[in-house]
Image (cartoon, rainbow, N blue to C red; front, side, top):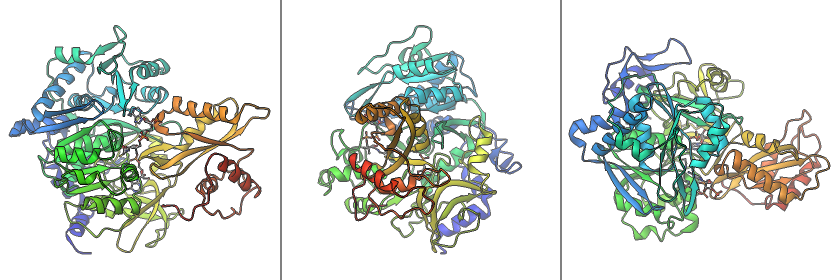
Length: 638
Ligand code: COA
Ligand code: AMP
């Protein structure tokens, strides 16, 4: 290959410092860097060392100073509250500066942590950007997590402040957020000094005098605060993501490298121009929301859509088309699960015909594998390039993508195309040998990683090394398995750990097993991810009860389902478990989770050579049929 993409890609690898220094020149630096890449302590590579920077200045003030203050920064579209609101760059800058002033007024300073637990409201963005303005480190926690998960994050990052809202709205259901915050603070050992609560009129929260402050009152009383200079390498945020145990990993993002990579990606991957409307239909609680609802569109001077609704049910499967048409969206970015949900309700795309979608130039999908059937449906309905791209919370932006802004390469369904500039993606066998084209193995990235990749895990340097760098020295282990074909196209097939992907949400089955095992009647358990037509995967539990338990199985399953909901949250979507007499194991005692998953999915199962007792597979199949699984299927979309 010798096209434009190839030239740019090669330069990003062969001359990486010049490449990223050039990209960095598009941003405003308080003090320029001493070194573009500090490689003195691998694998702790640092970008733009010595530089002073402020992310909020680059997202906001910079555009206002350049005369773009009247441009809309955020379109808040909330079908669940029947609201559409436009917020200009000048207005957003003012709100952010005031909220930064309010936080400074209660003692928040550079380096302090602030947890944000809010639904999809503009104030969530204001809070994030205000932290960036002060140099405080935000940690946004997705609203679908339970109080216990919030408490774990409070104890890990020890925030001085929690910014929350009185409630969220899930289609028509009001979810009271404040009691969850109160409960989490009670459960946590670390106690934040204050909370600031946005009172939403659907459900007001009770405030604890002296600790809880009202958003409106503090922002009205506050004086605007200037941007604080931080080191480019200082943390901008911590975003917790599922690890292989119940303890989440605190992925750290820096300021300078993050801004450089994201700003570059808007033009080169998404083919956007400043002033255009970009819509990432995700949630600010996920990495896609951090990068492409908040930081990238604002750094680049686009208008970002903040959508508080669902692809279906708010009010119907035409919601996405309504938003695109109403706000002249140029590029939509979402997870394939959203399209599967829409397709199921409107298979012929009748609702699409009702809207003028001429503004839409491309659809980007990520968060989970894009199954070819969904891709083809989206292509035929929308008539624009549909681009699958692959990334992770750890990286903050795409590792592999078809870079529309550089050159649209041939699309191969099932592949997120080639490694993006900056990423040297390889496939290695378990013993570290380089895989041949087409051979499945561990997908790794040769170090150094490009800007925006996580420089460490919060408070967990050892875990950072052990989880990502120890197994294949000199490489970042992505924990995804797959292959690269003769044309350099990457294929992501599965996770190599116990992470499953439910509706584009990354969840740990190990974490769920910890919860099931804590039930007093459960002797042993396992959780696997089984195929689901809309969500891609769903967790399914297996329970072996302690001797002498006579409780009806239906009741027991209801109890463990509730336990997972209480401890992890509704986002886990854990709804089904089968009670079995024993679990299939190898002779050395390893639970054969993969085999159980295949049986549940109705696939043919080869008898594992190391199985302890082959008769058990029949028992598992019968138990699964009892809960609606293990129906033989001809083929399941991978
Ligand atoms: N606050 C509180 N609860 C939440 C929540 C939030 N922010 N987000 C989700 N939940 C709850 C849901 O109400 C649901 O609860 P239930 O079991 O009581 O019904 C549960 O968590 C599971 O949510 P979800 O997986 O989103 O399922 P859903 O059935 O509500 O919607 C989809 C399914 C496919 C429509 C939805 O997941 C979706 O729009 N996905 C789009 C892509 C996306 O956001 N991807 C993220 C990464 S890009
Ligand atoms: P998260 O950190 O929540 O973004 O989840 C990252 C994981 O989601 C990856 O490690 C993959 O397993 C999966 N993933 C994300 N994007 C894709 C994609 N385009 N194709 C296949 N899997 C993906």
